[in-house]
Image 1 (tube, one colour):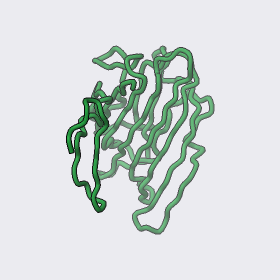
Image 2 (cartoon, one colour):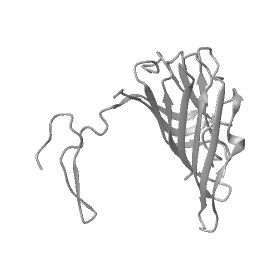
Image 3 (cartoon, one colour):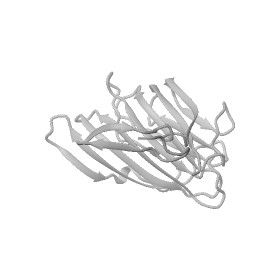
Length: 214
């Protein structure tokens, strides 16, 4: 296959369910720009504040994406949380959200899909739980992503959604957590902070990306 014009979508050809050839995959992640990486080391919080330490969280990008990898809690049975700041010094933007999760245990004997009312908020000002319980065993951690849309808007509420995966230590279960909601404010969201519900983030990384407008 010949290379298409500049900016043309990638062409992938499959033969008998296998990848035969790829023309051009350079454009797949061109719209995704790494802004900042924070690494936890017994950290109480990890904060992304617009205009601080090279963090951009304004009208530069219409969508922002946070990706965390192997965030390990120092304390057992805690949740990973995100707080949104709307111009003050506190991470207390008013949130309305919903939560559900899928689970399966290691023994293969128990699985479920559940709405988790205890993880949602109805005009709450607390940090948003974005995972269920996380264990502090040596092999336990959480990884996932959170999307934040148009945080600099002063007209609309600020939508967010997240998906995370972790080992719930209580069974243990594989837990696939989903969160969605909005900061019910018209003020700009100028910072996002991550923490555990109790104790430190012992280890792990969080990356902030800007997603270019199409």
